[in-house]
Image 1 (cartoon, rainbow, N blue to C red):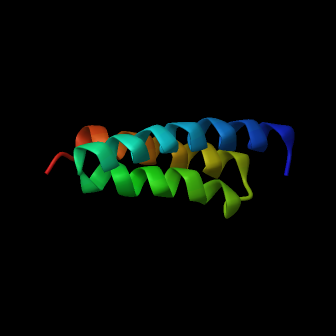
Image 2: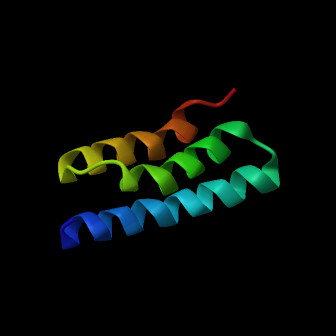
Length: 67
């Protein structure tokens, strides 16, 4: 794991924590699940490009998908 991957993982993990807290307080499922996914996925992705792509997609899902 490179320093770049650690920093991107920290960034997306922090955003995921914010989504998780927001989803839990507002009782909304989409931000809650995206928050958990953002906190967990950096452990399983080894490529920096895929780390960024998946992180941006998971950050955008609660904005564009509002049930």
